[in-house]
Length: 463
Image (cartoon, rainbow, N blue to C red; front, top):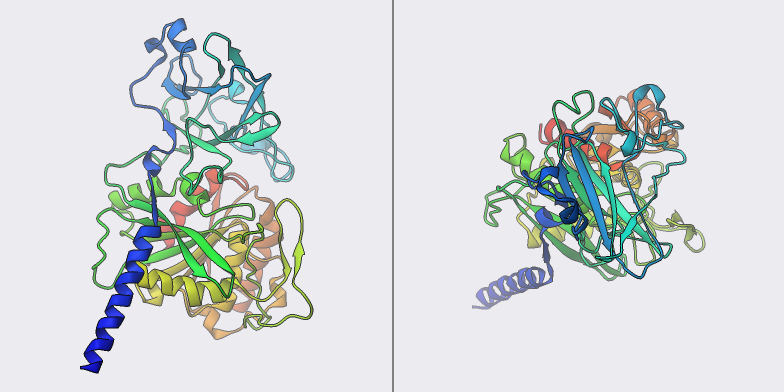
């Protein structure tokens, strides 16, 4: 009788845990968190008066546009002295491009053959002055844009902000500084340029994205937020659970970066719907603490976790602070707290072969350290635009490092290629650690990382 009572209490505790998670988790409508072409609107649908009267950012088709499309932006502020707009829309050509150079072609000067690229050492974006329509109170700016998802923002009174009429897919207002606009590909007018819009349109067969949090009262001292993508038809009773990826953001990022700027939901929906990948779960944790510092993932030379340090922790201060000296935080958090939380609250596989760790930039550096410290806990590691600048400082001869599948992805003009990625590739090759590579045309930018995400999903995982 006592055993039955204990079993009932355990079952009740599990049900309560699931209930708490369900209440805490917050769904986001990622399919309506950006602006795109409606498939029919053209410049012929507007009289000059109707165009001036538009009150929302709009994508429309036009034979007058060199790309086939225009985007006209709107921001309401009748009493503001000025409003500026900036976005990821500088273009270049390969012959003018490197880590330190770019043609910096403004959208107004776009021509067939251009691709998205700006100088990766001193990256800049064009800030353009918007024009005020005094009758409506809306500031206006219109440019041709080639295919792809563009992150854009307004500068008002010296402060940067997202589009209040086009809020990004964030956990709470104000986290993301950019809104998104998606422009289609024109096979004729953009025939010599890349199709940056691939897999990014909304699909009727769509999944669900939730924002949740992992309690970490002792290790981190706070609840760590994360986004989680559940595939269409998610079955909480599916035998064996779903394979999943833990996907990290960059040094200045948040849990919503991959969801909003990375277009994770639409891309994954389309890859699954087209049968290119199996239904899976994607987890995008917030890798920064309450003070904005990236959680520390460093390990000892032999891959063991750092459990003690001399003196107090030391942080690199600045716009994007990080820990310079600290005990290992990432490894014990992901292994001892996040994975158990996912297994208790979502139907994820418990098989190592169905678990992957990946990340971009600082997230790639974390992925490198997770690979060194937890090679037996994940079946796959994918490093995007980053790795380690001093791989020779670690023992890479350990046999367990040869077990997981390892891959690198990077833009060919990325500033971290020669400083991080290439040294790690050389060290891995010398140590007999097998890996594969994928190189994209571009630098340290979201159009590259979306392409690397597709490569990871379709070429690397679960093979």
